[in-house]
Image (tube, rainbow over all chains, first blue to last red; front, side, top):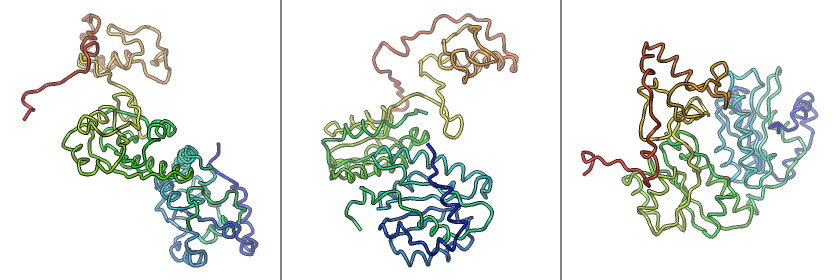
Length: 165
Length: 222
């Protein structure tokens, strides 16, 4: 089974970023806690660019910059889900464009493995999703996150979170 | 190195079912190297158990700890001060480690999270292969450091079976023919003469049939 979900949807949203800005952030309104691990090579100014979205959504969104998406580990994802994330995204560079050659390929393998782990405890594999940043146009991490959040939420709150915040 | 694989979560949960306070104990040696029982795997399994319990409305306490080795008393002793706080120990050690901890704490429930598999080598990242059966009668010196007991599907001591195809084993084409390796290595070393000797059947009594094996060395004892 593919580790990707609706990659075309992401590309389509990026192709019309202004429309995205006007779109109600569906996942925000659904009250989901989102965790985004991303390759910081994607956006040299990620530290500044993600702040506005963090201020806007508060605890509902958590960003974790990685030196390369190949640094992602199953344990990062499991701890994020355990800490209350309803949905975890791992954002990689386009295939063939990894700064360290094959970090994004490794990330893809680890996502597939981790999806198996979370299925084993009865969670939907969709709670973890790999997003490949679009090739070509440079992106900022906040644009990327808004594009992700603008998609219709395919899952509800995690049963692990229960009635916590 | 002893290799192992994690049991399915359903089997682990079944063993833990009656217990509420669980200590998950990893081992930082062999099973850490084969990515099945080290500190990271302890974290993964503990997170999975906690999330599974939360999602199904069960209240359990799962704590994590990793010893450098679970098969040596000096390291097992680190459990002494904490083990009384738990109902059960879930060990991510090999079978030897699980039993060693159980010997030290005979009144404590201890269950394995791993299936211990074989003595192996880390061939490459993410690939471990068996290359020693621990037969107790090592002949690697004669066979150019290729074990025919383990690496030949037929365990042959006196030459190849003749069924190999382009240096691959006929039983499993993913595996190189052990005898092809033995002959080509000895040829490279100019020691084909070692193969002139006919080897009698192995003495399997050194491996099995007498209960658990023991190594006793007076010079190593206190």
